Each structure stands twice: as structure tokens, then as C-alpha cells.
Image (cartoon, rainbow, N blue to C red; front, side):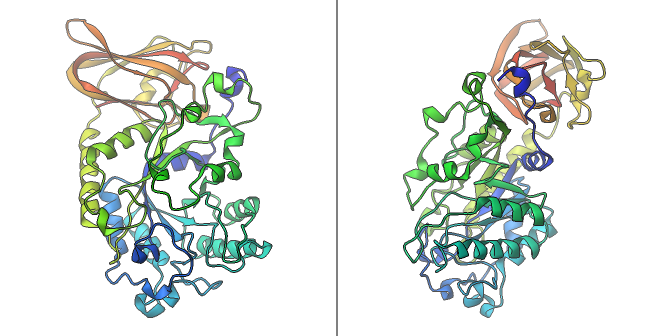
Length: 469
């Protein structure tokens, strides 16, 4: 693959919209919440599900406090219990004690998200340990029927999230999933919804621990999107050790020139980092004192959202149907930190200059985020200096860079150089890829000038936004 062929690979509008959400929530909630298990058997009595204080607005308030822009709900996990009154099975919320069988958790969460101004998405497990149809072709019809209910009765859906678990059903058989049919159903009923993990739009980062790659490329081999490959790498049983595994060394480089040199079929497939705010995905009272620290969550945030990915953070509701106060406290802390850190863009009134400029794509365009106007260097120039000169010295700790990903991902290597009033320079940050967003965080430094030295790009680099904080 030549560099020009690499940059022909670009995102679709669904992928751009999804990545712009940046930080969003998962809510794992089912009968497991009441059995104190991570994975259900499919034989649980639906009557045990009874969140007597359930408040979807409380969930949404907690999500928004953290600065998240969306919420995905586990509408059906591997145990097969549905959080909505599905017409296609009896193992659902209508057989529970919640609201005397008249409740619909999916409806309440979808409505609360809409009222709160955040996106709503659905997780529907292809594996169903309760359905007697599982392991037969009829199961694919059943799955499509339930998917259709979720995609037609609950308003706009921003994401449909499929994981790779594929075990045996009650008849001892495994299912052959008709992924192409599932995708077609989603495209027809919710054409703007991204299909994540076992799907073509959003790529699983490869672990559940919040581990990230130093260089996260969105242009990768098409074979990475094969659902069967994702399933093979996914958790196939309740495995606490699996939840702590990191990305393997062989999986660290997915998109460098070296990694792609022999590939013939490439796609745009951006990474999502998914992990839980606690050790488990479902609520366990024994984990109330094991909520991740603010520093831990910020580390993941900087390396996911700030590393050309997105961050999906799980918030498991408790048996009352609420996000626990310890989790809420941490969400408020991360939201307050992010709002304070990125409140004032110090570069707004600074002077921008670039060592190479394509006419009509001046560097001043990078002062405002967006893809309609942007900076681009002259064709053939793959190394460029962007110099930001402040009216007076400022104290800087962060630089935010964004490429115009509609023109693919180009930057491969850059330095950030701080210059003080005396003209003394030092490198404060060295990075590799930029992509949708790179957040470069460094020790506080007084600067009169910041030089973003793009040392190498696949073809002439672009910048849709540059911010200093």
C-alpha cells in the first residue's frame, strides 16, 4: 500500500458522529444484579428483578455530570432476560415484580436520555442462554424480531452494541449468527446507528481493562472487522482474570506503514475503549469500595478520547435501580476536572503561523473546530512547523490536536516545543498519531510560543483544530 492509497480510506458520517461523542456510558442491568453474578444461566426466575427505586433520570443526571454524551443499556444480556416486554418470549420484565409486570426499563431509559439531551443506544446479546431456539436457524428469526422491537419502538438509536460471546444454549447447541442479516436490519431501521464491536463501524480496543495503544490507527486491515475474529478474542465465560488482561504485544501495532505494507483491503475502523468503573460489569455490594480512582479514570480518558479513540465507561445500577452514590461521586469529580481543565482555550487570541500552507487552507482555520474549514500543508510537504505566539506568556499544560479525518489520518510523528520569553526552547511532549483527537498533556510550563513540529506524515498533514489549555 502506498501512502496515497492509505489516505484514501476515510470515515463515513456515522463513524464521524459516533467519534464526536467521545465519552459515553454503559449500564449493565439484569437478573445478575440480584443473583450477585456476572453471567446468568438463563434459568433465573424473572420475579427476582424488582428495582423498587429505579430512576432513569438519576442515571442520566450521573452520566451528564461526568460530561458523557450517551448511554448504552444492556437490553438483554447472555441470560436472555429482556428489560422490555418483548412479544417474542416470556423471559422478560412482564414476568417480574417490577410495576406488577407492567414496566419497561428500556422505555424509561430511552425517554430519560431524550429528555436529558443525551444519545440512547442498545446492547443486545446474540447469545441467549434461555431461548430453546438457540442453535437453530429459527433463532436468527427470533433475534431479528427482538432487534426490530428495539429499533422501532424506542426512538432514535445512536449505537447497537454486539459482543462476541457465543456459548451453548439450553439444548447444548451453539448458534451460527447471521451477522449480515443483523446488520441489514439495523441499516434499514436505524441508518444512523453505529454498529459496535461485532460490527463494521466501531472497533473493540481488544481488552476490558482500559488498556490502550500508544499509536491508535483508524485505518486498519478489513479482516479486523470480521465478527468471528472478534468473537474468538472475546470473553467466553465469567472470567475475572480476562477482565484484567492488557493488549498483547502482537496486537499493539494495527495500522503503521510497516503493519499495512502487505495488506490489500483496508477500512476505517476507529477504536472504542470499554471498561467498568468497578471490577465487575454488574453491581456487587462487595465492590462499593472498589470504584476506580479519579486518577485511573483520567488516565484512561487521556489515552482513549485523547488517543484517537472513544471511551465507553460502564456504570452498573444497584438492586434499587440507582447508580450507587460512590460511582456518582466519582462521575461528578471527573466531570468537574474536565470542565475546569478545558474551560479556556489560551490559543483563541494567539497568532498562528505555519511553515507550509495550501492556499485556502490557512492555519487560522484551525482555531475553530470543524471539518468545513481546516488547515492543510502544501502537497508534498510531510514535515511542517505550526507556531502559536501568545500576546503575553501563558501557563500551559495541554495541547489538543485534531486532524480533518474526512481526509483520513495522516500525521505519524510530532513534537511540541515550548519557548519562553527569553527564547529558550524545550520539547515538552513527543507523540505519534493524532487522528480524530490527540490530547497532549505535560507538566505546566510558561510559554510565549508553542511550536507543533509535525515531523512525519503519510501525505501533507491537516489540522481541523488546535487548542492550548
